[in-house]
Length: 148
Image (cartoon, rainbow, N blue to C red; front, side, top):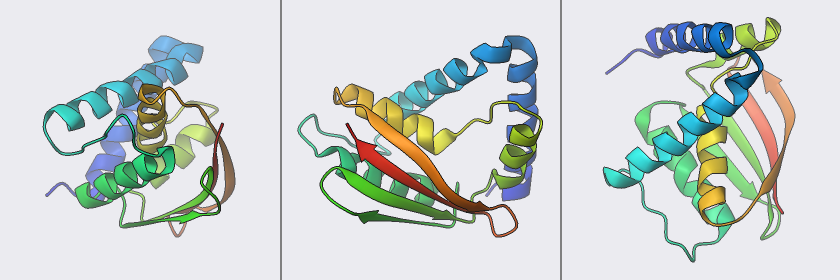
C-alpha cells in the first residue's frame, strides 16, 4: 500500500514539473490525464459505465472507485435533484500538494474532478462545478455539481 504522504509528495512534484513546462496549458493537460485515467480504469475493469446511465450515478461510481483506491478516505454524494448534487470528500490524499500548488498560482492535478468531467464528456453531458468550502487541515472539501 502506498502511503498518502508519499502520493501527495509525488503529486506535488509531477504537478510542479507540468506547470513549469506547460504553464497555462497545465489545466488542459490534467483534463487529458483524467480522460486517460478513465479509459484505463474502464479497460482494466476497475470501473464500469453504461452509455444510458444517469450522469449523477456515473459521478457516484467514480467517487466510490476513488474511495476504494485510497485516494480519499470517504466521499459522500447527496443528490439535491436529478441534476444537482453536493459532493463532500474527507481525507483527500493530495490535499497538501493541491493547496500548496493553488497557493503558488499553479494548477493541481484534480484527479477526481478531471475523471468525472471525462466521464460526463463520454455521455455527451457537461456540468458546472462550484467549490463550496474546504478545510486543508482536515483534508475536507465540499463541492456543488450541476448537470447542464
